[in-house]
Length: 90
Image 1 (spheres, rainbow, N blue to C red):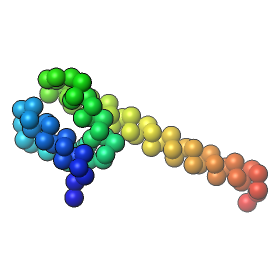
Image 2 (tube, rainbow, N blue to C red):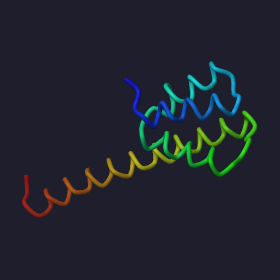
Image 3 (cartoon, rainbow, N blue to C red):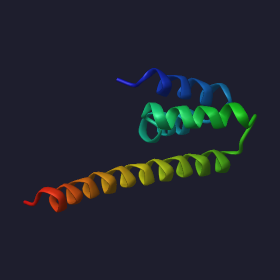
Image 4 (tube, rainbow, N blue to C red):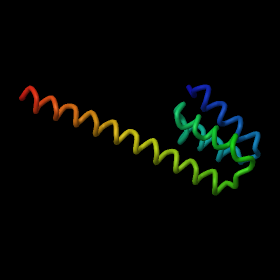
């Protein structure tokens, strides 16, 4: 079940005249979290009619940012475990 933001993203993409298959791929396969869908919606509201190439480029940038955030959180969690071991031992 798609979130409201994902559904909104799909509708905005369709309203802007992008091909249905592309809209579906972007909204339901790649931008399927509230975070990514909200970021893409922000882009679409700021830029009036981006070319398909620019739209895909923005999608890839959003996904790269998301991946970096995930990696940062994982590293912070690992560092917290290491710090606990240093302080309390095994």
